[in-house]
Image (cartoon, rainbow, N blue to C red; front, side):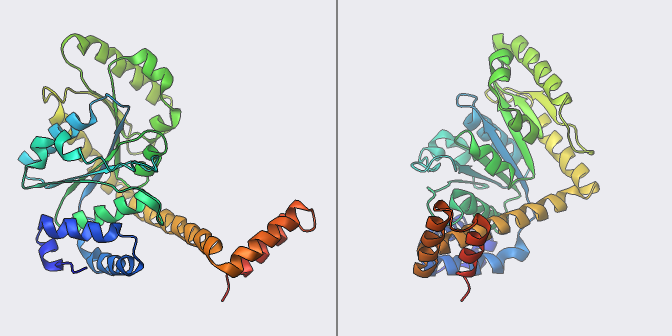
Length: 320
């Protein structure tokens, strides 16, 4: 598959889409070509702010992302939206309606919207999203929005690949505060109570106070105390305040030396995760290693050897 690298670096959306399609291919030859392309583009990456956005179904993620993206474009930004759902092996976040859900945003010259494909390959959807982010950065997109389509594991996946993690909530504090996982609050750099308009405005303010209280008892980084803001994506209310907050976060993180350190740590953790997945893949597909695995498993079950010795021999079988 031929990729026009020069066109991609100039921001050509067709070249970018083709490059992302290459990274999504399951063919070994395409995988090798994709990795070579990514390595050659690395000097042109890293100049964006990567923002993860999550929220329960019905919270208005698409409306918020469209309003937020349109605001950013008016500020002279180039915006890429990537949808990811590692928790779903069937749809995998490949919602072909993404562009119709954000119809106005998708028509902007400085916007690029791309759903993630289904998993089933090394690294699954998370790797494809990470690689798509790098390609979007190389194409000059300076704001990358990563939307979690699913719930559960997807929040942790997305938080591990972005600079700023934003959680959208509805203005009904009681039920939602009981149902939300504590871990999500610990991941959040900010909570935004959406749909804070009309009759729901007072309830939204009560919800904001509930989440502020909940966040105050959690341990956070020294340079940033997560904020809780209100907004109405439908009425474009407080969208500018949210962007100002994210910009403040970026400046504080850079001044504290945390911004680059966080990205470096994410890349290291991702490398080791891929190492473990490659080893697991080799154990499943290499005939010799597979036979050693089966033999050692049977010996452990029969109490003929210890799990440590069995594990050591399995690892030894990978040499060669």
